[in-house]
Length: 354
Image (cartoon, rainbow, N blue to C red; front, side, top):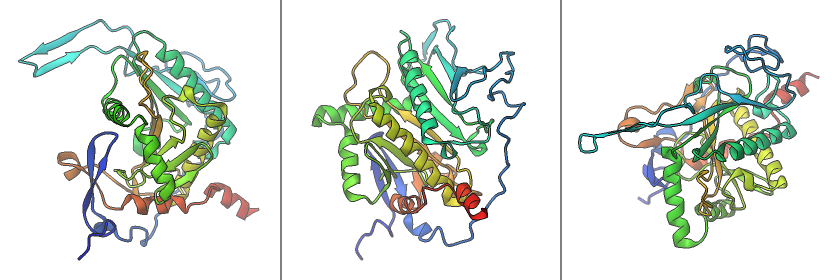
């Protein structure tokens, strides 16, 4: 019997993190053939007077949001990181008990004043303003002498712990480089030092050539299901040109980034005709004053849905105790995403009703 990646259990290597994922494709040969449950989504108003992110509303701390018309950012009222933290450190028990103080700050990024929208329902021009605000915040926060890492991210959907449906994301800026970016820092640098090119530029060149895992592509960006994906519909948006940070993108590339962000999330929503939940974030060069030519920025998407709008993937058992694992292959997931329309399902329904 000849080995087949679509039939037989195997492991796949992630060169960005130096980790492996267990793939068991025989457990889900036809994951799309059963009934696809739909859920009734709540219809939200354009402005919710009880929402602390809507324009003109008063937040819990008493501050009033301006009547913003596109994007808006403010320091998180319930920040996980604080600027005014005294320096402290512990190293006891032969290094077994170690801790250190951590300074930082957290910001909230409102994508739109419209309470009823999500990224796939916004126009590309509006999303481009989000990209511009990300770049502005990355520059300003990273310029602070003690900030060495700026993490931009979005949690979409209550299943991802998002407590407010208003379209928004967050930024956490801090002294230390967190664990996931630190792993990518180490492995990208080792690859760059050895080959003189970025790991992701060489990787996406192969992906674009093969087209097997590409789900969307424009002139400057490509969206793919990584060969080493862990989550069922995990994807990554990568610029075709090797740039270390969002501020290195040209104006045309920022437009293309906004287009790829919108197009991918439309495809996500269309899979199960539901507002598709995910955690997404940009991994890019640290803000430690170094050039970091080894870094190739990219945006990762980790959605929890598996078979329908109500069937979710949980990291339990083997995944928590042994190794990340998935049943459907990256190629199967990519085909499922790729086949989706670029017309949002809500827009398609409205057209049919006319």
